[in-house]
Length: 268
Image (cartoon, rainbow, N blue to C red; front, side, top):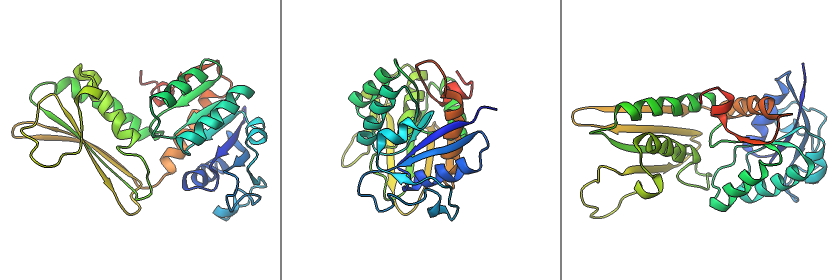
């Protein structure tokens, strides 16, 4: 069995720690390097120390050396950091798994451009269950294409910096595509004041931020006399980590291209 060497970005963060924990339990991968921003308090410390399981890999701030040591970079940091890491991975010919959200159009275009030279998995949510929900939404939208109003409700912890979440936006995109709509034209992000009656073609988004909520997402199809709700709730970040490792095993060693979890799960 080929063992994939991983570089974990943002290694001292919440998601970085979860990725390291999952990787240490996966015989198909090894943590080859772990890196974080210069000045982070954990630079120089063992990447597994925060988990109570030292692994012999120190967290470093030398991005180039860390990326060079791996077959694949897994990144759940911030858009600006991810794009910097992507540029180095592209230069060095390394695969990349991107779970970061909040990219603008230019950032997404940069990822697509990099994927002409290296294999990249870019998905708003790496959890297998969430990607199953995306597929269920395709079916639901085709069936409930007349007489149902669509609303997307999402909740995350107080530290999340982008809204709506990337997962919520992808849910809206899936439904809009099946309904033959342009999400940019029909999305409503919150309501206040005298808004008038709801226009049938709109897709609404509601955002909740508070506490330590890992991630809850519901798509509501509201008709006359009935409601259909498709919901996914995350109890921890481990499903994102496990999906990311699956993505890394899929993408490492592949020809250049842009993939997402639907490709990896065979849901196209």
